[in-house]
Image (cartoon, rainbow, N blue to C red; front, side, top):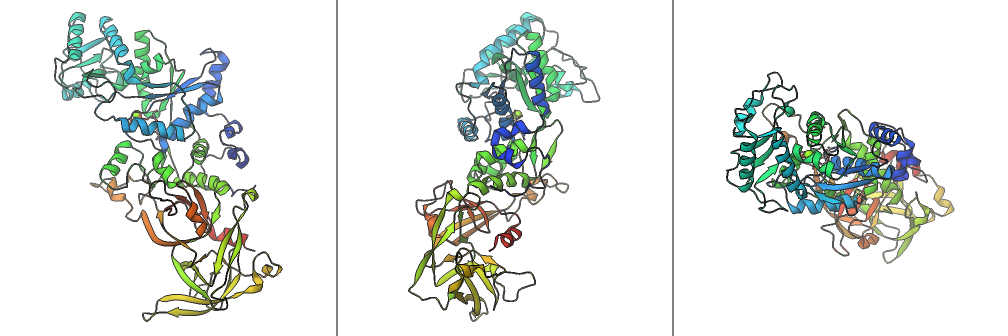
Length: 585
Ligand code: ATP
Ligand code: MG
């Protein structure tokens, strides 16, 4: 089994093709990344009594994207590699942005990626009562106080990176008063924003997160799980580490922007005197030509700039799935890009290449003509038809062959004919011969035009002795074209996609403009009357094919109907011509 050469765009060349094709096992063949090294050191020193327990902690405020896939593969991957476990935990502390729709979609996507949290599905909101008790504990210890500053005042008192903060006038309230006010906050006596509970740490700390951070805010909002039971909600920083602690997480892996939250993570665990996991930060995934922030993805969906969260042009997991990505390709991609401590942007071509390699192995070949040009074989009897044998997958002989109908009237791609061919154009032209894939050699003898001078059809002759598979088929011609018998064709819609953004970095905008400026107006092309070989009528939603010479296509999961699939191009072929010319008989 041979595979295309490694894509030169791949940033970190660990693992070879053989290793990668075995999916997760390939991790064994590359050097350990820094988090694996930490875990192995911990196993060696028995720091966690031999346990490895990670978690994936999404906030249910949007759909998952390929960046989350990196975190999922890392957390579940470490657990699998070191005989540990990985929890799924919803970090649901912000009732105004969280919805059950997201809770459902996140579970579907993690499962689809191939990971299993078994019975370890948790919600930070399940810990609200415990968190509240811990807050009272800190108040009693003189480590937390109720503050009456408004949000604006709190910000102003906090100072800046260069200027120290100032103590809140409420900082030295007595414990009893703090307890009383905090209980009344919980009881709903105050309006949103009227008071907060803050940790009493150090207003002069060089780390802004340590300048008496807010622990609780008042928010009279209905929570997707706790309903109206609470009108105070803990902040992320006061929730995350304690949730990790309650679940006895060993390695709490998060992205780099939390690096300067770590002292606070540690402070809460230490001051509360509870089990203390280790927070480890890694670089988040960024991809060229797309946005990854949930806020922007939500804006694209809400503003109707895409079909929905599952638009095949989005980097969401459901968008990638609808586009035709496989879990294997995504996991392979996550393995290839590695885990590092510095931020970088990965070329989206690396992701596309992972899909190409996977579909090259699994997708049956088929012929489809997207922009048809009619061909009449003048020496082929009108009433005759035959079936030619076509190989289903040259990468996998076990996939066998199929019959493709051939007749007098065919279609080829408009692009595959030039009346006035430039040099090195080895496709069809007046007087030239080409091979029709899996069938005969034909020669163009006449170009038929309408009154406006547009080409309407080509008249060709076929060489009956040249059927592929016969000895005479060895006769060399320079081009091989795909084709479909016009009479037998399945007429279908095929969609082609380009990057959603025109620029590698969508944020790179002229002064005064925002990322919308960089949207690619031509990111979607819908071809309504394509000619597909008839076997494709049986394609089921989600089935993958390689349309010869055009790329990998997947039957749309939403718009396909029985017998009438709609196809999305998942990824184009690389080096189409080089490959075709090499493979040609
Ligand atoms: P926000 O917090 O702005 O809503 P988020 O992308 O951080 O967005 P979370 O739901 O908090 O969303 O993310 C869940 C987990 O996925 C976190 O551990 C986060 O660090 C990780 N994650 C999110 N985006 C990426 C990314 N681009 N690359 C790697 N990991 C990511
Ligand atoms: Mg987050």
